[in-house]
Length: 222
Image (cartoon, rainbow, N blue to C red; front, side):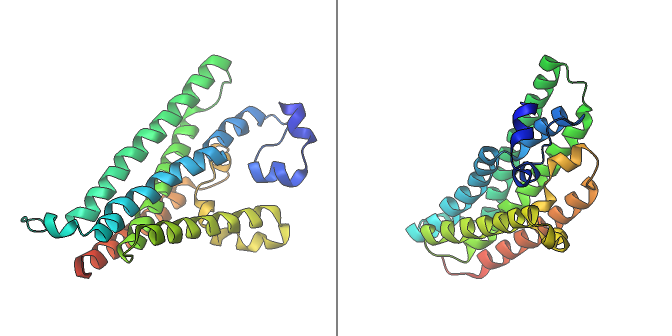
């Protein structure tokens, strides 16, 4: 695998954050598992589809009319969806972390497992901020399809922006403005990124978008 990675174009290895023939190769490969495109797509799909289905979808179907005939506060609805995302994302990142522990044990890589626990927690908070962003977008929409389209479009645009920065050295000055820079497991496990700052920014974004979602849902027509 290390020999194969060394034959790849420099731009590609920079993008995936793995360099063949280095002492950190095994560490980088395990970290890449946290940002593999399949993992990113799977994790992002959850917090995009759930708010679209259970907020905009229910608005579109007019089912909130029946639900709100009961003594139920409106803010409970977006908070319930957010709580579900906390549980679901938590279980997913626990599963990813357990996979890392199993890989470390099976291949006897002698890695610092605490660094991967840190990366998993940063990822959990990061995707939680993405979930609150999706909830906020959905509270402004009346059609599930448009809600999905706008949320997916925003996430793809943010990911594309991050990719361009990684592949272009002339755009390094934009590094700190990229949303996906908040989740860089390769740098986190090598202590090249400040996990505390990433968590703090993600939590601030989560709180802001969740507040917008609650306020908008409370005042909008259902």
